[in-house]
Image (tube, rainbow, N blue to C red; front, top):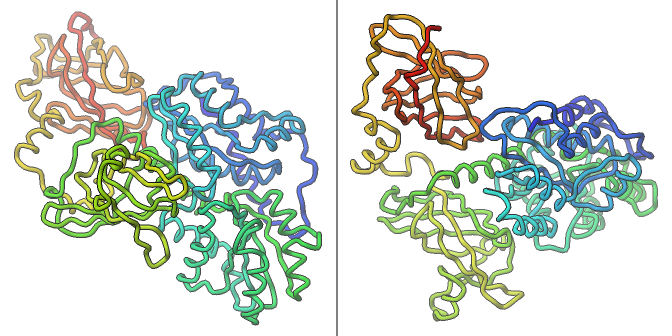
Length: 580
């Protein structure tokens, strides 16, 4: 499937139109731009050539609320999509909006068709996508993120793998990165006499606490002239006005949306001329007001956060491709470690976990994104009903008021049953947790035993082919060609056949040309080989260990978010040997 990257190139070009003053609003849009036309081509799958790579049956679906402001869409949503496409050239990038109203407006006004989530998922199934990564551009794990997660559950049996990435503000690192991104962007205004105010949307969901947490992060970073408010929740405009008046040192207010897109809220609720807009209210209070009509999606550092979230999702896909081997407490050095935890449910979202290892025993303090669960039980909900109260794990509030739970961890890289008791529903819900060893520092894992090392060496082909030596070719030295067959892996990669065979002193060396440039080494009979070329598809020169039988090899691909070793076999067919 040919990726239509032209749909995103306009994002970079449109960047020169980023800054507009208060009152500059989006008028009736012209006919659909080239950017959006090409995006439609991607949706309708009108392709002319077939890309051959290891992930051609995989796609990344970028899901946004959407906007009817064409220019803002190009340089925000389009920019995020473009950043993801650059980071994941092996994936097809697709788009979906969650707002049916916006979809209908664009269809009627621009003749531009954009899928809603259900249509995008149905299209992916129809097109034969096997691995689907869904990356929302939402700011938080709120109602829309939950709705998206619930929709995906209906399609779990229609893909080999489907995984959803995290929203923008998820981990502590996300809050730090976002705070840094928005303050770096506006640092020229931070003169002590200017208040820089960011306007978020706001929600009735518990996730609205992200605005307060971001404000706390700004305070922690010493950014005392920065304020976070919302249109529809707290902190409200009135709260921000009161805070500025109490400070008493400001002459000017700079307003900017804390939203991916500078759309209707930015142009009307923030920068509009009506009496109740943020701009008008601050002007009535005697402040000079400047509005920056730019969405978060225009900031490269924000785009990078979304890319990192896609990488984390892709890592989980890669991990699912490999059978997990449990890692027990005895295999880990004593100490405390930040650890990532994969949850089977988006409703049970773990934002932070601290693993404690002591003499082979492991416990973890996990922090949830909300306050919906009164207690946990390490087991299923059915088992929880039969157990006594003494078996339940109650929540404890941390210094920031978040709910935390101290749970035993039997092993890392292994599914652990965990039932959670809902405060609202007054019932147990089953979850599965996986504490991921890959998130620990490398030196935290103790050296494997001799038996484990031997097992790993066998897996890597270090002992499996020990009885094989380069075949003796009873022909004169020279260059030949021979048919070669590749098997294994995802069956998407190929090698060129016939392969060039160079014979010298009865030893045969094969030149293996892959269908992708993303292979950085091969392992043959325990020896690692690197490419002999620097451009184009990866080429390796390896010994021919046997004829007319499968030779196990390993090829490491960098096409995924991190290098991934894939097992293959090569078979050289002796009856096809010819002079080159």
